[in-house]
Image 1: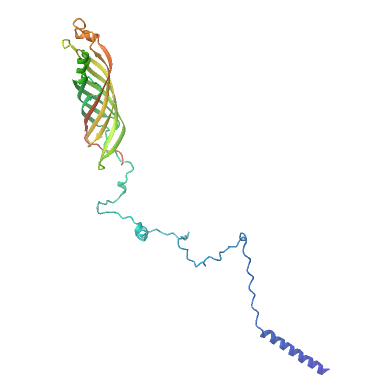
Image 2: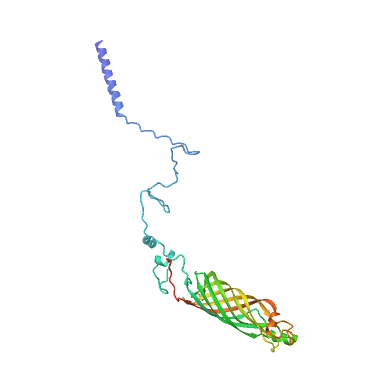
Length: 324
């Protein structure tokens, strides 16, 4: 019995030794890689980012043509560096050889240009000449002057006076020869008026693209008197004259040459009711001037005249009282 137990103990020890040797001598098995996930057939799961397998790997450098902005970094621009980096074909060449380049400053930038001429509190002395435009029998040529004071830059009050000379036009002789009777006409000796002027329009134009001419349009309305005198058909009879109330209206243009000199062109319509020699005047009727005047025929007259004048301004200079 003792021999059997000893043999069993020896066999057990040998079995344990063999098993230990076998367990420690074999290599460890390699881990099995995870199976690939199936391709996505719809929207990606929440919390997962789908990557394009064909896209190049991210190297940390932004693609060309894209701008990477860092909200925590403030980049200061350098205009000289940007201009130097611009292509030469995009640069604009400035020709500085044919003209003088002046530096630009804030004082050279003006939003609204000042008028080159002010009339406020200045006096306009304007001699002028005028001629009749709408009388085909008698042409009157007038010479006179105006004195206007400007209460504001657009409103003025003034007076005018003029004397007239007349000459007969061709139809006056033709009517006498063909009809065997002389026309009934009057001549104007002088006129005077109190006028008001208003300037609603101001502008400028270029002459040969070199010189600027400033101009304005103004309207005139006033009232005055005109002395009219009949021209007797028969020189043996005495003429008579009439002093007529004469309103007038007109429009004119003024061209500024210097600060104290302007040229004026205008049309003025003088309106009055004139008295003419009676048709039946003879050796037995209306022989005296007073009798002819008491029986005179009347007619409404529009004496339209074209005027050309030159204005001299006093004082000759002016100063602005407002900021530029």
